[in-house]
Length: 267
Ligand SMILES: [Fe+2]
Image 1 (cartoon, rainbow, N blue to C red):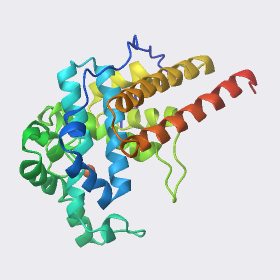
Image 2 (image 1 turned 90 degrees about the horizontal axis):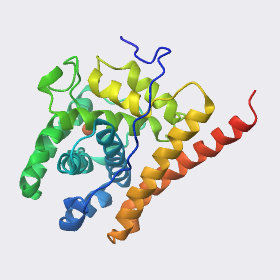
Image 3 (image 1 turned 90 degrees about the vertical axis):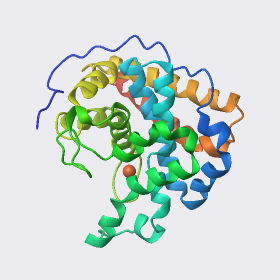
């Protein structure tokens, strides 16, 4: 597997600050359906919200236009909606899944496409994201679609999805810090993830070797996160929707303060 982290000194981007002109359509038009997801599984709902935040960070690194960013964020907010058709017994199972249960899990992109087609018709443009978010660059994903054939939005959401899986604290394992998550994503470049997108993320959010630079990158991401959170609140989106963002930011802020402390007391 190619490792593009090496000792490269990757530069950060300009960091213009993430902006959306108006709320993603899901927040204003589909409250009832969207809330139903939260009622089914709070963990699933939070995961999709967090994935949307990471999707926004990646889109910004890629310098996409606002229309595409909004589409991809909306796709991220619903990418796992098909899991609401899978029983909570399977979704929350503590031990390993049986082959039959695993087959059922693998159907969630297809269930998701059906739900979007039936219940979120106006969002049909996100269907490629929902359908292909488990594809891999090397073609070893759910449907064996590979490389350039995987739609851009699906490739971005796939990285954002992995980001949340690694950054979140789970009862059974220690969460990685932001720097370690970026490194792990870089390690999977060219196999699981599109190398161009990974390189762009690393150029934009990757860390220099000095602690000061680490602090600055984290600070920049926190500022962007706060902007996103404030915008959601300005749009009168209930706090329940944005609670997971708030927790996510708390973690980043904690990481920031630990970095500041470490920089002041170098070993
Ligand atoms: Fe998924």
